[in-house]
Image (tube, rainbow, N blue to C red):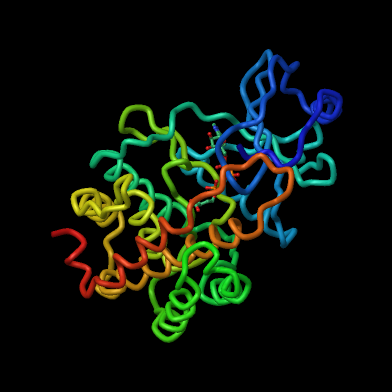
Length: 319
Ligand SMILES: Nc1ncnc2c1ncn2[C@@H]1O[C@H](COP(=O)(O)OP(=O)(O)O)[C@@H](O)[C@H]1O
Ligand SMILES: N[C@@H](CCOP(=O)(O)O)C(=O)O
């Protein structure tokens, strides 16, 4: 469960007194999530998510994330909407943490991923990339190559506590990525974390896209690589080409991939594997005391990285 900061009844009552969202009926911490503290609030009017942002480094980031969510919702994508208080303010504070009330989206995140789910995700991701072409916000990806280097330096001395030999693997991979990372692929606004827990479904139709708190300006094909890793491996971390085919072909129908983007998929998938391997490794080695959070397995992403290291050509993903 990701609840880093507890919110008691009187704190909640003081917070809600600034809003016109009704009286609380129930309020509980949400089991899923890693980065922020999330609560489900039900009032006599509606349901909401209350998020306390725990790891925001740059104060400009939150207005970027919230205005992106609003932009997407206005374009008809199923993104949640930030709720403003009586004074039109979205961003508030609880116990010294930035906080926001967000509209609740119905739907469930799925564990048993099928080809139709991947098709819907490919389509939604491409729609998001097209819908943000006129979004004016810009945010550098602080978890791209230079951010991975920083994480390698912070984890390499203790990485072998997780698996003997891991330190050498991450050092050699970061050197490869620094040498070979593409520089001139089409850029746009990317979600950068569109994992199954961040997509809500009703059947095989997407009813919600959530958790835009890693979104940034980067290669659009990198976003597809993040999804390849998150959606196209089974529970034992074996790659499933039929899932990848549906994801890529439906993306490509909505926003055709350029030849350069297609050619770059193996290295983009390696980078996307490193990003999650390193962040999970850092979190594993530096647990937050007293936090109720389910840490994720860094070695899942080592398996994925090693799979992509053996790929020579993008066509191998869909055979
Ligand atoms: N707008 C929303 N509507 C419905 N459920 C939501 C919404 N936002 C978050 N959730 C629920 O809260 C969980 C954690 O939210 P998320 O934004 O992924 O947290 P974190 O940023 O910590 O990863 C989600 O997996 C989902 O179950
Ligand atoms: N998707 C990431 C974790 C990021 O946490 P989220 O709860 O914000 O999605 C991973 O799987 O490592």
